[in-house]
Picture 1: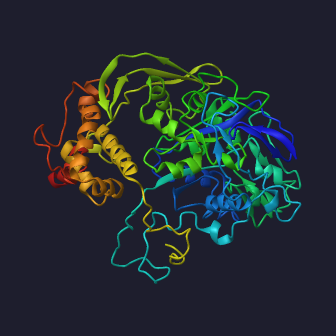
Picture 2: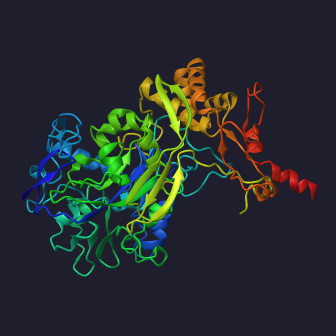
Length: 421
Length: 144
């Protein structure tokens, strides 16, 4: 085991390989306040990458209803439980969120999945994990928002019609893809060294020629985004639509383009980018990159289960209506500050939030041109001032991709064409 | 359709189980609904109707927990900030003649509301459909 620095948990940790970082890192921000679980991302991915025989159970991109949904079922509850059993009562954070880039969320004092040796079976295993059952993989949104038939009657919908179950609880939708982690558990666990992280963009891929289908990656990935394909007997995972990210898609004109799941998002919750990396694994200062701004300046976007220790590169703006204890467990101690800033956004954050999904091109830099004050008022004891600023997005080649305004135009279909389909 | 019925003794099966949320969480929930729909141009009456309607499970849950008085206070507070939206609807011909984009306007334009100011109590789904032009197709087909 090597010692590597994991800035998301604010300390050094054990990892089977020495640390090495890409020049740029594939990363994304999902604003799950906006997600409506329309599954457009899910189907965009499915129809692009996993539509073949043997891939029926694979959903590289999925959206699940939290707290009770999960694909595979109970994935997060199970790994959290394993970690708790490995280190009972001590899976805790200390310190407070700060401006220190080496520990922005404080320090996680518990055990990561790489450090729970006492729970590993067999002893040669490198990562704490488990293999989901076929049943857990097979039904990605079971018991979520689906209509059910009469109780006790299998495989048949209610002939007289029925109502959706009333949710007597809070819930939210969690959209997920592979996090292309900086310390991937799948890569750490592979006995064939078939998994690699690309130096140019940090995308984690499985070499299909080297893979022998031992499923150690499936077992190790705490997010369960590595999947086994029975008919080819090798494992597969999200490839981050790398031809698009490389700018090789015919539509891209040679410029880096966002993945299919990002581009398909009608809720405009998703933004993907390529962030600059320092040699020590922290993000290089890139003040006007929208992802850098949201993660390191405004700090509204937080990693998913940072305590697992893989340093995931997917970041989430937490849903503001969900009880905080649950969110702190899911996104770490930065939750309260993130929700505070998202609920009361400053002028720059309001403008940056308008950048989501105006284009399929990856945004490398933004610029804000100040506009007039539209109005001001008071909400929950705070002054709200809205400026109609213009925000301009630039691509890798420095050329403008688009510009948009804080006051979003609302287009209403004329009566004659209320529904053109 | 689920393959099998949920097992009520399985702690992972949370379907239909009450997960307690404190009053603050319910208040946050109410603010989220009131803000989001106020920004879509809902009036006071329409917002209250939304909270009272069991179809909107989240909003209705908050309404039940907080009561009508507190819900109305939240609605009024949100409307004071976000409730100034006026939506301008332009028909095709008008758009062709007028190059001004159909947009969200606060102070000008041809405001189109389901009810005029002061008569905004008790809006219902048909009002919203009228507003969005969703009831118009039926009328058109009758003409034909």
